[in-house]
Length: 69
Image 1 (cartoon, rainbow, N blue to C red):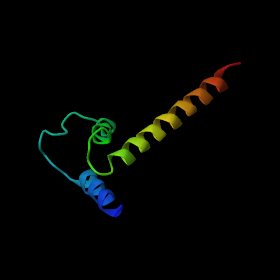
Image 2: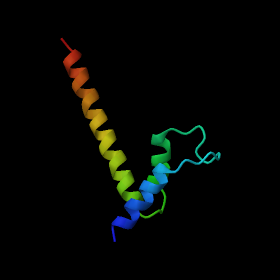
Image 3: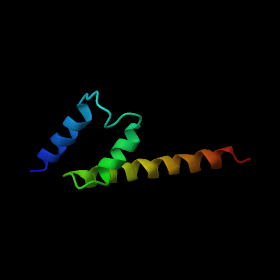
């Protein structure tokens, strides 16, 4: 039953709509909108975004510490 939300998100990500629904938005912004929606699987999208943010913050801290003499 978990396959259905994953397939839905995959289809959503692969769709090539020429409409204005996503015009001007970055992939991160679109994923954030999906993550905050009530679409099945939205929680997983939000958790992936949170993990990505955490990894980015950790890398920034490591880079900053390495730059300190």
